[in-house]
Length: 96
Image (cartoon, rainbow, N blue to C red; front, top):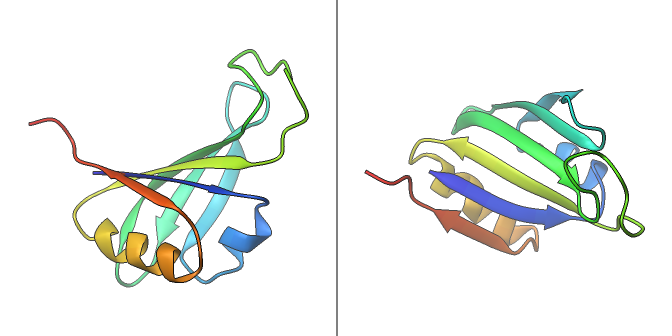
């Protein structure tokens, strides 16, 4: 299962008590990855600043972070928690 949402900054997500932690840079500039550790869900995430391509070249001034969270069905609870906090959330099922 995969959840995709956007935020204006890191603090609004990492400071919300949703379990986003261990953020570290990826191979591409402006791209990050980390773990979700919460009592109700677990998973991994990647995020990047919208407006950058995979080479890290900025096409425009980045204004939003795009977050992709992967995990099992318990992420439905995370999606609900994000919606309560005002984030627009997309949910995608893994292909079986």
